Image (cartoon, rainbow, N blue to C red; front, top):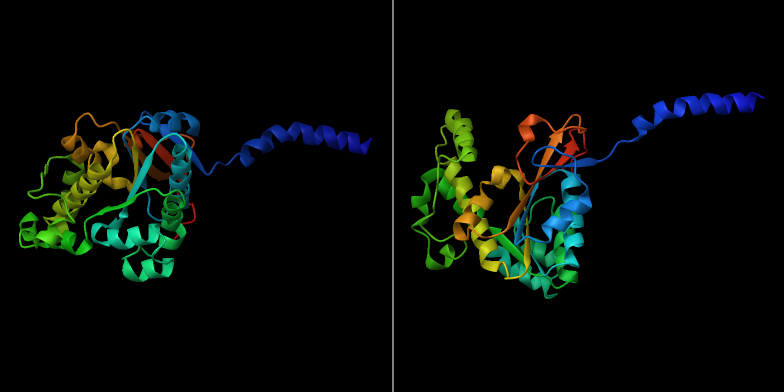
Length: 285
């Protein structure tokens, strides 16, 4: 009799216990803040020419989904991969590794790898290696971005012809009225860094240039970058559209919130697809 009463008691409380157990690692939204199934997103992504996957650099969900999205697209389209995390002058070393002519240790000593490479980006590079996919180092060498932050675009004029191969063609198109750059200029005003938006733009332009240069007709280029480089369809996306207005581009942004069951108004419209992760997610570094 006691066991019977206990079962009835437990049954009455299970509906109240279950919601507390339903704690997803992330929720996917569209630009308007409507929840979306992962599979539905993939069906759209595989129809694009370029997918810009915007990450939070130290967020494990960002990195896991980058890998899963790439795997999900792999069987449907011919892929080319690329990333902000590799600078264009390191492309030869990256190619040697992809072709099995350089060890991982050799890549680490030859290229300027990010400190979280082994945990967060090696899985993507190794997926490319295993499937014989190109992996493009799209970013400007950091020392040249630093030149721009100090002296503007004019500082690039003194580069050699060889060095200029590693950046977007000069002169750089720049619209200081784009909201993202306006916001950056406002943030940097007190630090007296008037060229910081230009330094951001040279990165965006260079990444867009090498994406466009390596995007194969009929294929899909998946690019991994900091979310701020492609949010609100600016940055990389803006420069790609300048190269070809007909290019089909899908953007993904990653955002962090204390509560993820509804998307905050401030994140609406950041991208075609928005990965919403709880703010207490353990960072990778």
